Image (cartoon, rainbow, N blue to C red; front, side, top):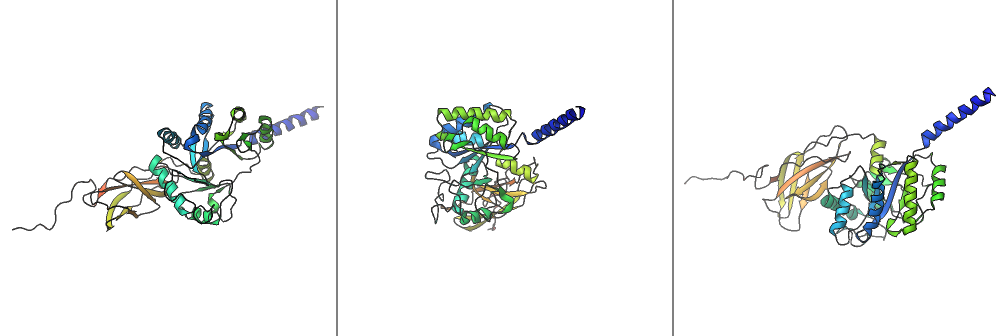
Length: 359
């Protein structure tokens, strides 16, 4: 009897240890298709997550601002300014009226997602929200090898989420098992009992991405999502974002921004092009990932290194001022360098006159 009790206690101890090890997978709530016309539906979901105070970081796929309405822009900005809770990542489809402006169009085949779209997406998010996109994920139709090539060449995207294409640079790939689904079909949240059974069955997996489309949820789906969210909280799910998980995998713990770029020098190439050069920023902890360049305090472009050629559609003036700031791999921005113009010194004061002649 004593041996039976001991065996039972040992078995229970091992089961408890196993449950402790696997009771809290990482979870990303992946809300797709953030658009101006339907953003209030996604806002309902993010507000609910925030109200639960459950460290509920929410990955948001965003792709369009049809008219740039102030309320919508403020909502996106609120997400971008709270990286502890949210991440805005780039979806594989941009659509008409995209926030990303010129260059958003698919080039070549209908699903070929090429360089102008990546570049304009990055530019627009920094310009509008002071936010550098880090994560890319395909739409339901997947990507293609052109997409892979452009992604691999991009110096700012660090994560390709759940790939279906080959050839993606290995350091960027993060893939989950996909065994547990938030929706039974697009726009319909899974029956809560079914979800709970699947989640518990796969609680030993390290990671789950739960994709949802709140702009298609009816009242019943909203109610089921609320129940599922509370279930996940009760199970101790560790809510995270792709970027937070990436930094954890890579051991990035840097909390210090890079040094401010220094020694900015401007060179006129022609009437519509000015080259800005600078001394590199320093970041010993996580390295510098790139630089943002500003003309007259307005963002004009990103560059992985110095120099940057500012090409304008109109004549650039000698009085135009330029500033540069750096961002590191922990996603921390430096301050801006002092303003510099061709017509003046680093402080913006006029240069002394030259070629003086005495009469």
